[in-house]
Length: 527
Ligand SMILES: Cc1cc2nc3c(=O)[nH]c(=O)nc-3n(C[C@H](O)[C@H](O)[C@H](O)COP(=O)(O)OP(=O)(O)OC[C@H]3O[C@@H](n4cnc5c(N)ncnc54)[C@H](O)[C@@H]3O)c2cc1C
Image (cartoon, rainbow, N blue to C red):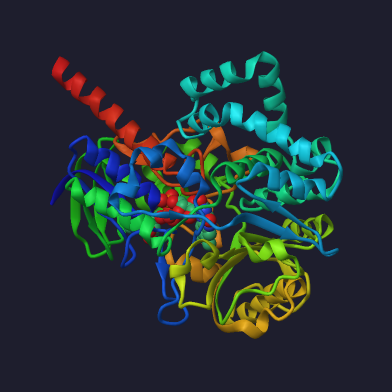
């Protein structure tokens, strides 16, 4: 069997790459290890029949803003975006609640309640984002060095603005929030959003990450696909199949076959070999691609040494709940929000990240929650709710801050830790637990079993820390999809610009494959 391009892995990046190659007339075959496509973008009835849960990711502001995804025009392939009345709420111990709304006045008003003047501070901060939103997104979603995007960004900012922006990009949430706001509301908004990644709010670039996601939420909301995350995947698959692409599930790739320093084929677990006449694109993590599929013998020794320093992001522990009714939050805005950040103060956030930094399973987890029915009532029968939530845990735990867990994620560990997460929510919503009719737990090993890219529960394809960003991703010197093996391209979140459902890693890999193919053909014509 032969294809022009073989794509290993049907996550969003793999599917985006496959779509872009199929658009150019390539015969594309996507090989997926799991029984269904989607990677970390899937939904399933995890609890009761009729309760649709997002098994991994749930909110897609990046998908909505990314030029890569918008160019695919997925709504014409059946995708319908839905938004909650309020984007995000973060209730605090003293009964206040900072909110993010697509109405800038509502966000500003909530910040104003934390300190006079903070509302206007947010309006200014968001206005600075609006001036650069498009060129910034373009710069992020194109390969390093993003010449066109960076030029547009520099023109939009001007010399002074560029310097200010560069300074902000290397600040922590703590410092940035101190400079922009007087009350705790702004710090909570930025810190909670930075914690969607693995970057500590007291370290750079958490300030930039928190600010950027807050601004995206202000601009687009945190949209969800009607019917579940799997509908985003279904639209990508429909588009690909309509262009002649093929997807084969339950087909784990065990080897990339390299001949004459070029990737020429892949081998499947059942021993089958599939030739790839033009390119192999890998939507798998960088360590898995280079160490397991390619083999160190095909890589320069300096590259292998750089790979030794590859750093994973935190592990993740996830719960999906089926509830008999809406969560009785003490803070009213949380009853309208699609996303709720649960950690009652910046003090608690700091203690949580300190536990993570010490390799301890946190005593008081920061819970990132999704009240999915707020945006999409189709997720469960009328009157009931599906709720999604996760927290970070150490990638390799050395202990438990409460001294209860082994850190091996036994069934006992999982049940006790899930109770701990629920206790944090119960503080803000007394009566929450009494509404639970079923819960489904995914510990780090459980996540990895359902998607080999989620190594130890790492959801970002490697840390988003500055040391592994931009030209340092996944190893210093790359920042692009090209690999040391000709005809082989890294298409997963391990490549720049990293985790999130924006499709840029896949698009960069597809463009690199097309460019390399053009060069190869030109050279062979010239001979
Ligand atoms: C719990 C959780 C919550 C998240 N929340 C959000 C969110 O709300 N919003 C957001 O934007 N992002 C979120 N993310 C991150 C986002 O889902 C990922 O960054 C994104 O899915 C990465 O896409 P990918 O295509 O690179 O990899 P993946 O989506 O991980 O897909 C990789 C695919 O490759 C397959 N594969 C791996 N190895 C092989 C092999 N050898 N052979 C064949 N197939 C193979 C896997 O089975 C998988 O299907 C979340 C992730 C998780 C896990």
